[in-house]
Image (tube, rainbow, N blue to C red; front, side, top):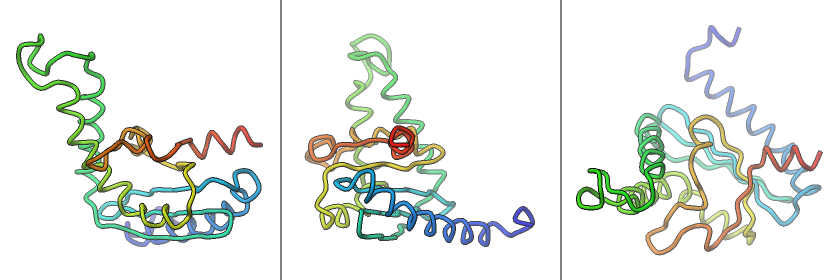
Length: 170
């Protein structure tokens, strides 16, 4: 019974399942999107696991991260981006930070947590189309808007939802 397993065992079992699914995903990427790289990101309590799949490669890497902090950044970013353009946090244009001033630091920090750990693998893959496979709060991250300190990721990559892509390809 999986529900009786301790959380660490559940997480380990889920990662094994994800790795098996990613092996299957390699075949579907090769068939349906040979010029793309599929990136699945799984946020656990204290780690983020990244599965990077192309038509002929499969890589798994992980990074230490606090899921509560990650979710807080995503929530704060959504709030910052949902503010009306040109408004200030303190009310009318006279006070508080602009939407850009509030969002950019979060976009940079999320880049460091969610993209930088796989950036080298993506460069090695030599592809600029990324199919994102995301669950939970990660689905609310605007990956194309993440900022590496010099430019937005949309300036270097195209992004699509792997789930939507697979649905359309079927």
